[in-house]
Image (cartoon, rainbow, N blue to C red; front, top):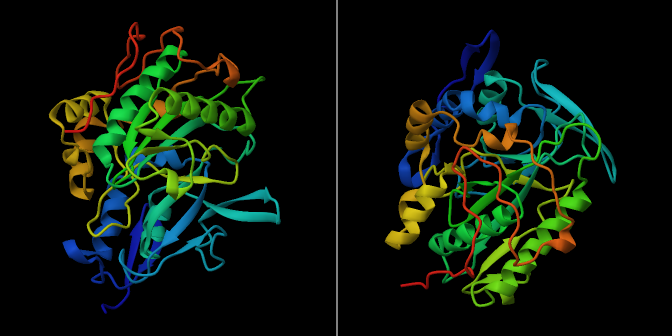
Length: 337
């Protein structure tokens, strides 16, 4: 292994170790490249990390090796790494807060390949800033099936006045986020968003019983897309947008536009939606943050979860990825080829 290298990033001193260690074996992607990726993607990633507690998912021997989660910010952290103390059932935890490029580089040097965020900001831990649906296809269903369901989920949400944006999981799934970003009194609680998301998942399951399940049990999932609504919980995290994933190659949980998803469904091929680190960097450089609406769009949950039904409602407000038209015809999912 290589010797430690002392560097300064934005005025902060760091000791980087084992830079030539390969962390993605199939791609020969080294720790140095992981650190480089996170420092270069920071301009679009940091707004999604701002003031959010994180859980580290560390892979000391690379993406194919053993891993562990770390909620409590390591005690050996540099004194400039910020933390937030959050009350949990067992007491309290000092979580790491990523407030700049140096902290991202420090995490990458710990072989923290994946960064998982909570759905709240540390100042208001009981207030979710978004609602999330994790579309997880059970084999033989795949990403293309998740895309088909994602388009129909988007339509249902639009019918109830909610815009949403999407990102790939970095593997076979799709994450659909509904920005909320409440202002002032009357903000929804996690109980509200979880109940709402559950009811939406049940509505999708009723519409498409052969393609969708809202039940986590593995016996219910083969050949279907599981809509995981349970992520809408104060104690749960989701993989942060622009985070690397622990796959054989350095894929990223990266934004995708609805137009791209529609084209993939039309072609019958979603393979091009999963992007690796270099491609994500290039796109961010050219197009900026395609996930920005998650942090800046404010939307109320206008209807109580019990009111969600297949009927028509108001159109969703415009989002950067485009405004869907309310549906006038029964929803239909194209069949697999």
